[in-house]
Image 1: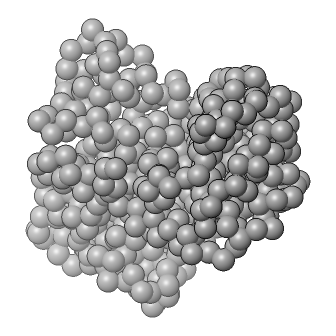
Image 2 (image 1 turned 180 degrees about the horizontal axis):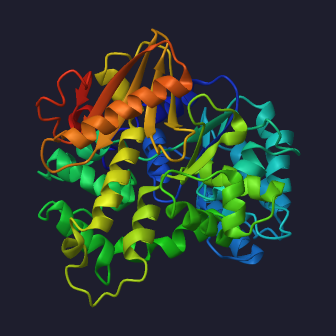
Length: 472
């Protein structure tokens, strides 16, 4: 099996189950293409006594046939009849497991939500399998995996019925960090530098399956052109499948990310309801929770504000890029991406996308500032005076009586602070101190691609200057 990149914590958590003295019910979830199946197979090195993968868009009969084929393969030379329902199918699985001599019986059910077709009784049969037999033993490790976040969260992890609190370990598989993406490319013998890696990350995020498409013989811009805009480019058509595979009634999820894509700094729940015409009900709250849990949006509190003022922001890199640049383009357009570089739309997107890269790597920023061991709270801040317009996208409020106001700037060269921007920064710091009435010291921190050029305006104004290297 190919070497896995990163995932040390996840691998450790899964491998620790092998020495557990009780039966374990493990739920592994995460967005499509993030590498869940590869992670599980690597952790257990294929030592499954039984494994099966659900069929997409299949009916009850097809799913039962699929399950029977996997079970017959496990039974080997002993013919078994196909079960007519899920209760019988799981009883057949129990009979097989009882006769295996393995001290630990690892069972892997991949794409679990696909088995739960309408009125199939699958979830009830799964409950019965676990509650009446597996949970009372000490040799069962049941690993279930799924990309459909709504199902994994609502029907399994947060189940209110027979599976309530039955999951003994939940493992959310998240996208790669920049460091892991760099390791991934080095494993492919790519020589792309960090500036180009960040460009790719701003388009694809840390989804390993997308990074498989990166050619080591092309620049970042050429790769983006090929992967996103060519007729056969993976990310040209990925969007139409992405949300439909993850969420039931995904049209509502898409309507929310569409409206958030129009407002970089985020919207309140009321703003979202007004823009999408969705009802002010628990169903909308569930959709927002599903999008947040799957990593497409984030919910954050402005500095010093209460929960009712929470803002939602689109943070999925590919979704934002698709809606801004891919959607509506024609494959006959040659060099579409390369021809847009450095126009106003590109500059606005790159600035925002780089901010999101930084926000995804806050721990790296704290480490670079030497405050990783200090208790902190992170938030954003926006002036209450609409005419002033001052805002800070990352505020690090530290227990040691310091607040870092972080400005993030994407540039092809060392960033230059001119007189106009210096005045803007001084006004921002002054407004922040006045409105928040903080007594803490306020440090201006600039996070840029290639650092800040030293001049009369930067001297004495910037307390911390970090480059993109800190994000790795």
